Image 1 (cartoon, rainbow, N blue to C red):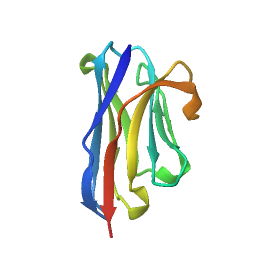
Image 2 (cartoon, rainbow, N blue to C red):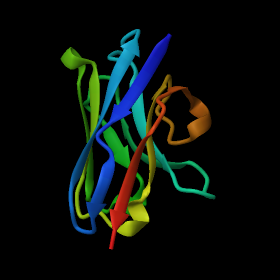
Image 3 (cartoon, rainbow, N blue to C red):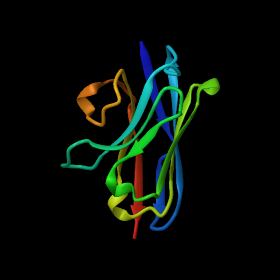
Length: 122
C-alpha cells in the first residue's frame, strides 16, 4: 500500500520560511491526488493545500493567504509544501495524504504519513 513519509519540519522564528517534503515509502503515489493537512494540540485536523496527480491544479485553505505553495515532482515521487512568512499560529504537526478525489476533507484521504512537527516562535 501507499505510505507517505513527511520530512523538513523544525523550529523556526516568525517570518521565516520552511520547505516540507512528502516522499513515498512502498507503492508510488505519483498517480494520485495529494493534500497537506495540519493539526495543533486540541484542534481538529485542518486542510492546508491540495494538488492534482499531474500537478496541473492546486488549491489552498484561506488562511494560507499566498504564503504557501504546493508542488510535486512525480519523477521523484515527491510532493512539497513551501511555506513563507510563518507565524506562531502555523505551529502544528503537518501531514501529507493521498486521495482518490479532489476533496479538502480529511475523511476523503485514505493513506497518511506520520507527520512532521513545525514550531514557529515569536
